[in-house]
Length: 300
Image 1 (cartoon, rainbow, N blue to C red):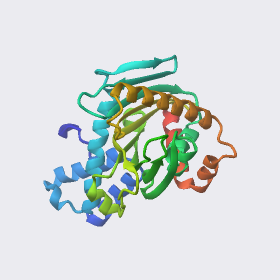
Image 2 (cartoon, rainbow, N blue to C red):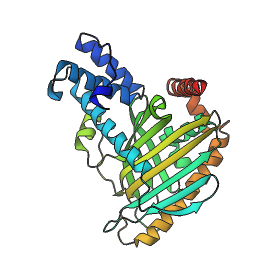
Image 3 (cartoon, rainbow, N blue to C red):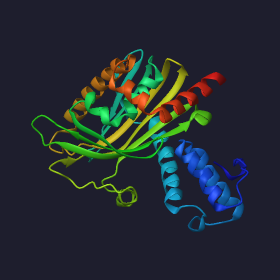
Image 4 (cartoon, rainbow, N blue to C red):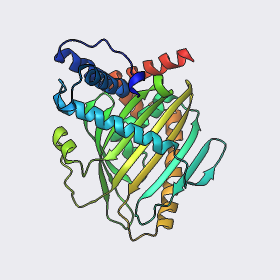
């Protein structure tokens, strides 16, 4: 946001109230607002970041997550060098060759006619990934530092090959007021020792090869209560350098298409399933996003 366009805030006079206000915004997935309040305070008081009067870990996390969301939105809108492979009226999948790299890059976009809360449950309930994500043998939700902030572990049982595992952090960003969308941001934390220490997560390998998810983003743009546009972009290293990139792209496209079809089938009706039970057991999260979606749709 440009300095002259910066939103004006009535900030509390003491640091404890300021920290509470920023923390509440961050916890409610209003990342843009939390970041803007921080920047406005710094600008108004001519303070440097090192002397900001709130918890340093919270300050740094907001700064990091905000920069990541900007990067991920750029990746979602990037159309350069993508090869369209599967195109239908409601679904498009693309891939990209990354020179001198074992990374795989995939993107998809779809108009989905599904109950939005059901779709959210399939994404949010990481412990249930093993029930629908291909080859996923183990999936655990390790910690929930915030309402829309999760740390999870997954282990993939692959035919012939060694098992793959990943420790992943994911968080949601409510940008309904700014861009009419909701953004989900994910990446592995194997190399992020500071984040591991902050949240007390041990990512030591146990007889598995650790996959690196450089970034994975999902953007959900509401059309109405039962229809939305979902865009996704991923860049990952499955640690399979021995497999030619063309073959790897082919395999990932097949897996991606299967996941899409499985996701749509399951999200159509979750009555009597573990996802319905999870929604009932976690009313704070689901009631919050339900109200946010209703508030947004009532305006348009």
